[in-house]
Length: 278
Image (cartoon, rainbow, N blue to C red):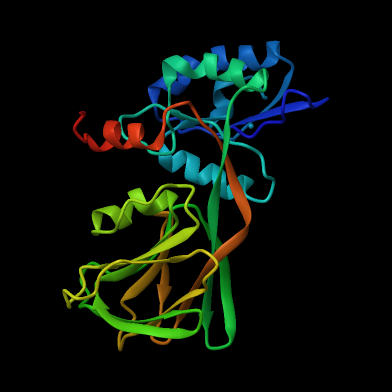
């Protein structure tokens, strides 16, 4: 939920949702009424606008919140993720707690947590083809029918190793519980200043996930005779890569601000990953 603080003269809320979820149609009129009653100027995304008469808060799952992060990254507006599904490490506010959480935000009592954001550059020779932002991870991967690719990894221009693998993941601490975790990477507390580099199904068992400081510049060089790799940020549709392309990852100058509940990170892990209680 991008929003001003309670002490601001003008308060704005933007609603970004996944309209296909039936809960959105049910909760949206009540949410809009609450925001209007509390003096917020309300902006909605085009898909959600069909539930209003033409009117920033985030309704949906982690995927919706990741989209909101990319839209608001340069504004430093805090986001509130409301969970309409069953699994979500970012959207930890359950729907029944939405309005009590909004009260806390309005009264300035809601804690805000700063999270790292990653900048990714795609280079072909000396040309930068594009610059992107990622909140969870940057992935260089082979296509479904391709053979293993070769990747050279550099950290702060120092050569680390050559990997023969399905792909390579560079994850933020927030993204350590996403694709990197399923590929065998470690769980990292979101407030740790680090990046995780995880090979996907490496040919050599000695190639393990690597944790580096987030002050490092990470570069992955694709070495492949075929155009059989792609680059993806936060699970979005990929960009085709060619032999010799380089993917450079570094810490963004921007941070992501999230309104959080009082639940600690380990409670979230126990709940989401079904870890056993004492």
